[in-house]
Every structure is written in structure tokens, then in C-alpha cells.
Image (cartoon, rainbow, N blue to C red; front, side, top):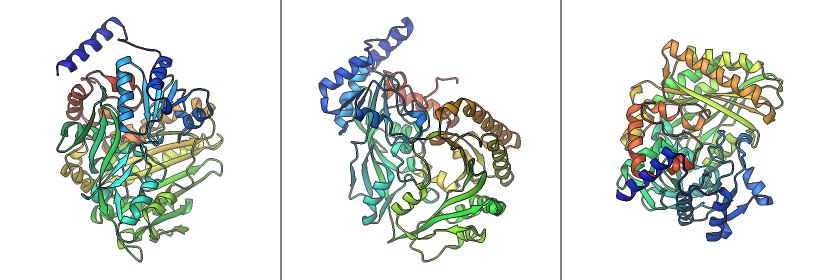
Length: 499
């Protein structure tokens, strides 16, 4: 504690007098890192720098780091983080690169840590798997499939491990809870280069804080995830509906939230509505999953067929097949922006918000490549209860009681960054108007999901003051230097007391 207090004093003096203690220009930070780990540095101006720096889902997140650091072990990450803290070097960390928030996983002028080289995946004998932070879910499902194992994780093939710090909706959410609630151990590099293993038995306060606290405490290098057994195959696929069928689908979406998802926890459905500005068409295309070796559609999913989809791919399948199929058709490297809020499932609000979003989208269909996506994603009482039973997270959803929550997602895709000025502010205003409508009707829940939030949405504040106070205490203990606030400046930060 004496050293931690000393670090706090230095930081306070720097803030008081406007002095950055022992600060170095980024070029010097890159030079120091290259002197220690020359094989891991990708320098600006090289072809590899351009390739790696443009490997993002959204073009809004391509920035200009001073250099790129590509470690292959937790020890190399620890060496770098200590160097950054000692010399006050700004940096950012990228996993799968699937955030749409500028600066969340990249940096202008600082050092970008890319974790692709941290790609370990190993099964243990204790119903768990260790996975490196640089993995994406598709290849992991390929690895786990022959062992008839799965983890509670992402649903799309190329998405990375960052959702294990924010919340994480998954195929198994109704049955086993959120992805963060199924992380047995986080391997974390702290501000001073120390590597700790945070679990229910060791550093339990940090373990809980990371279940929703994001990148505010350290760099995650590995996760130990609880595994669950799979049958020889599972049942799933996609159902597709055109505009004329959507009124029927809306009824099915609400019924799934309040009945089918609650009473058959083996199911998972992600209701998705889309608007194609090029063709001026709306549709619904919803991924469906059932954790069981079935030969036909179970009763809980039959309403999706009764709504008469024009295309239905439900079948016996493997996890990796579904992760690949569900991702098909989504662009990569285009402009992406997203926002979200949460409500108590409400049939009339579901209808009204989708109707008003369609009206709003019409005003932007002339923009090249314009596409709008809206999702209603249930979080059932059992999913929330699983989080409580597994040691609690910090999201603040416990107060929902026996009511199903719905995470409402709003996303836009288009071709050119030059159109962001016309679209982004209006988009933010539209979603805020829907939040206000939810408040007026008494259906809004305060929670804002990290993975789908806009850059200026108050994610951590939405967890509630009790959880924020807990997070601040953990922050003081594990990041007294403020490295993951002052040097890692992107993403959603822990607010000061009295926000």
C-alpha cells in the first residue's frame, strides 16, 4: 500500500501543477519498446502497419497510432504496460476490433497493442477452457466442437473476446446467463506489470469488477471460461420474413420475450429487423438456436414457423456453422455506428419504436450503402439470476425481478466517412427521443449495454451508484496510478463520485 500511496501522490501533484510526470513523446515510447522487444513492433509507414491498423469492423475506429505492438505472451504485455506507466505513454488495446466506438480499441499517436498473438486455447480437466485474449469465437467453436464442448460467448464468427468485459449475449444466455457471468478467471496485467489471476477465490473484488467494468483495471491476456457439454449436434438456423409478414413477426417477438424464452431456457432467438436504403425494403432475419439434439423444431420455436418465413434454414448443425451463418451478409470495414437502451418487454413499445425508426431511416436512404438494423434482445429473469448465483456482476439488472428485459439495438451502416456529419448527430437525437418515450411510458430500465452503446452514452453510470462506488474502490486498489484512465483514454470510463 505504501508504494500505491506514493504513486497516488505523484499523480495528484501532476494534476495540480499541470505536469505530466515523466512523460515521453510517443516516438520515444516506441523506441524504448523496440529496444526491449524489437520483433514485436510494427512501425508507422510500413505495409504491415497499414494492414494491421485497418483491420477493424468499423472504419470509424481506424486512427493513427505511433506504432503497433504485437505481443505473443502475457509476459510481453506486462513488460510493455510497466514501460507505459513508468513513462506515461498513451496506449490502447485491440482484441477482435469489433467496436464501433472511435478510440475504444485504437489511439491517435499512442501505442496500439494488438492481441492477435495471444491466441491460446486449451481445455482443462475442470470443465473450463483457457483462451487467449486475441481469439475470435468462430475458430474457438471449431476447436471445442470435437470435444462436444461450448462456452458462453459471442454468436458471430469474427467477434473477439471484449464482450467478456462488458456483458455478452450468447446462444446460452437464457440457460446460463451472460458471458461475463461464465468467466471463471481473468488473467490481468496491472498498471505496474504485475500479472494476477482474478477469480472467486483470488482477487474476488477484481473478478467481480471486470464483469462489466471493461478496460478500466488492466489488460486482460487470458480468460478461463466455464464450459458446458453439447450433444452431437444442436438445432438452429435463420428465419427470413419480408415486409408483408412483419406484423405477425412482431407478435412472435413479444411472445418470445415474455413466454417462450422464460419457460424454455434451451432456446435462443435474436430478433433482427433491417432496412435497406438501396432497395427501400424492410425485412426480418432472425438467428434461432436450440441447445438439444433435435430432429425437428421444438414447440417453443414453432411460432417462428407459424409466421410463415419465406426462407428457413433451421436444421441439425454445429456451433461453428451457426456462428458463420449468422455473420453472413454483415459488412466489414464500412462505417458503423450503434446506440442502445433497455426496456421492460412491452408489446406496444416494440411496435412503436420499430415503426418510428423506419420513418426516420427513410430520410437517409439516399446515402450510399445505407442500412439500418434494429434488434430486440431478451434478458430473462433466469439469465439475471444466473449472474447472481455465479458471484454477481456490476451491471445492476437485479432489480428487474420477474420481468424480462429487452436490449434495444439501433445500428447504421454506410459506405463513406464523409457522410457521418449528416447522420451521426441526427441518429443520436432519434435514439434519445425513443429513450424519452420509454421513460414517458414507464417501460425504461436504466441499463445501457457496453457492447452496443454509442460513444457518448453513460454506460457505467447506468449500473447504479452502489455498483459505481464498488468499482471506484476496486480502481483505487488495482490502478492507483490511473494508468487505465489517463493513458488508456478511449472507451467507457469509470465516472467520478457524484456524477
